[in-house]
Length: 105
Image (tube, rainbow, N blue to C red):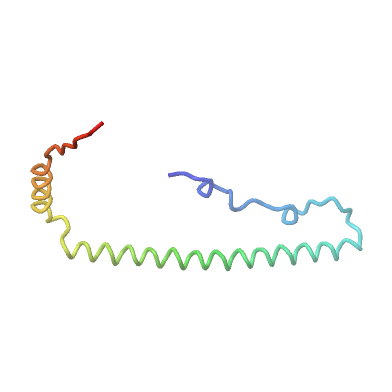
């Protein structure tokens, strides 16, 4: 299933600071602003990396849970339960009696 996150190249888009395009002319005084912007971008990327590592831990834990549950179900041999399913169907067919209710007006 395709979604926004599976679009190729979406996560490698360049920002204005990484493409070195800016509206401020290249004066000596603008270096402080450039340093500030680079520091802010670095902070944002570090926070994003932390969030991604936390998300990766959650995904890995869920994959382990799925594997253990799959192994547990395969050991029980869920696929050999066909006779039980047939018996349940018979019981349901036997209980298909019409129930009547009298209505008094």
